[in-house]
Image 1 (spheres, rainbow, N blue to C red):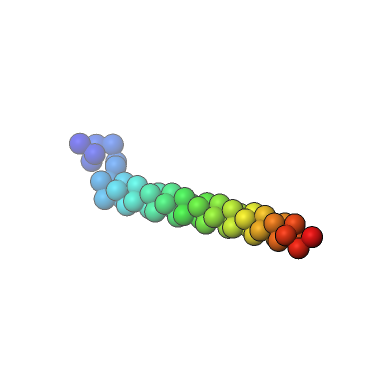
Image 2 (cartoon, rainbow, N blue to C red; image 1 turned 90 degrees about the horizontal axis):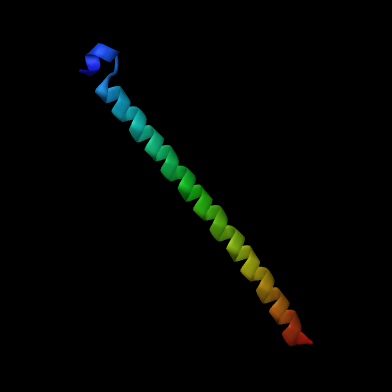
Length: 55
C-alpha cells in the first residue's frame, strides 16, 4: 500500500537505519565524554590526596 502514498520501503528503512547509526554514535560520544570527565575528576582527587599525604 505504500505505493499509494509515495513511500518507499527501502528508502524508509535506509533512513531509519541511518538515524539509528547517528543515535548510537551520539550515545557513544556522550559516554566517552562522561568517562573522560570522571577520569579527570579522579585524577584531581588523587592529586589532592597526595598533597595531604605529603604534609
